[in-house]
Image (cartoon, rainbow, N blue to C red; front, side, top):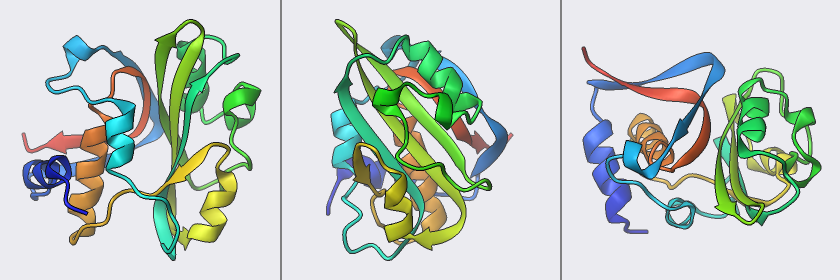
Length: 179
């Protein structure tokens, strides 16, 4: 699947001068479109992904739920993700099963107005897991990140796309550049 944003992100963040740093607990912040150099829409980020069908193992699975109501405040959903309290998420956006203890859950919660939110939750596993097992966590639509040669370049590129979504972000991984 050719996608110029994926290729650009891999060229920009795929080098050794960039690394992914894992946080003990996700960080929570609000990003507006004005805060992001080239903001993306959730629909665009999802177009850079694929259904997990045919993928045998994964280290990351995404759960996308669009135009969901009865979730409360986007900030509260993001703070629950930040605290890894997936059981305390509103029922409308709760994960289907609790993730493994050594995994991390992050997400982006975007206020769509009129009481609706788009929620992308993602689970990062410590080691590869069978995709069949990973998809058991999904309450909405399951997505796997795009596939490209160079697993670390792909991971960094994918995180850079998530970082370009405006909304309440709860991120377990952060791209760090050389100082």
